[in-house]
Amino acid sequence: MSYQFKKLGKNVRFDIYSKFSYKQISIEDDVWKGTNIVNLKGITIAEGSISAAGSLVAKSTYFYPIYKGVPAKFYKFRWTENEIKEHEQILKKY
Image (cartoon, rainbow, N blue to C red; front, side, top):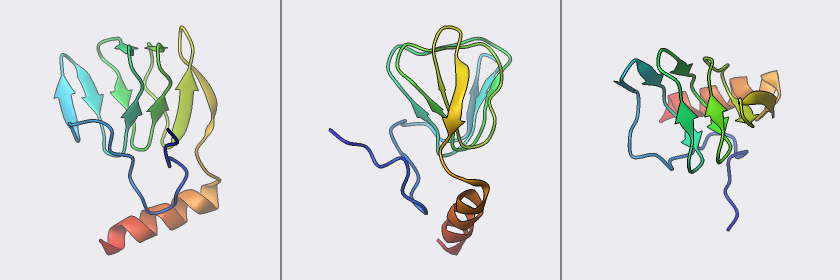
């Protein structure tokens, strides 16, 4: 199965929650969490973040990154800075 996490103007919606806090973990919109993720308390998963399956997220994330590993480390951004701006402009229209 192929997921479209790079399509501008489309949120990834693989989580039933949107903008919530639970046990001192804040998760913003447009977040994709792979299976068996461990989030340590007191962190914020920023808008547009992707955490790869099996990752241990110990620190708050940036906007629109991909993290992977134990502990989770920044891998790359989903898009360039200009593409992020375009994505956010498209989302504002809806």
